[in-house]
Image 1 (cartoon, rainbow, N blue to C red):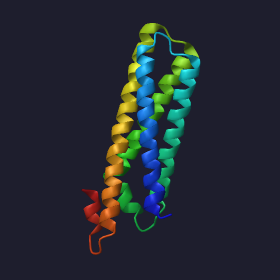
Image 2: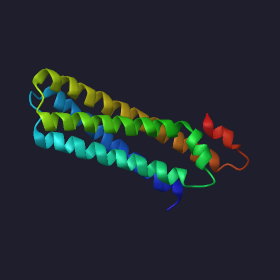
Image 3: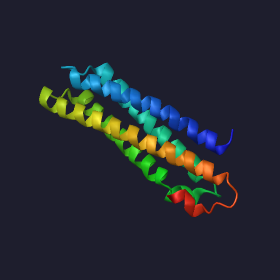
Length: 150
């Protein structure tokens, strides 16, 4: 499996997981009580997705030929944003799980989870587009590495 396949496929998987997290957070916002089981699922899924983001970054930044281009590429910042958003979602869900926070604060945390899930989804979509573009440009002989940064 080439490096682009090794990194593009997890981003596609992450998008599926993150879109599912958006749906779960919708339910969390509409439910009067977020069950402990649902909060556990949100925490687990968000943390696993954040770890996958770390794996994608690790694979792309460990390629000596393209590591510096990747760090400067827009997808690097988007992956960082997705990681932060997924960790935020996990933390908010764990607060609901641990403290059984009252309805007013639960609603605020559910809104925060929804925002974080949507933001992570958008960041992953941007990262995927940037990675596909960079991979396509890298296959064209004579394209300067500065072209990957647009």
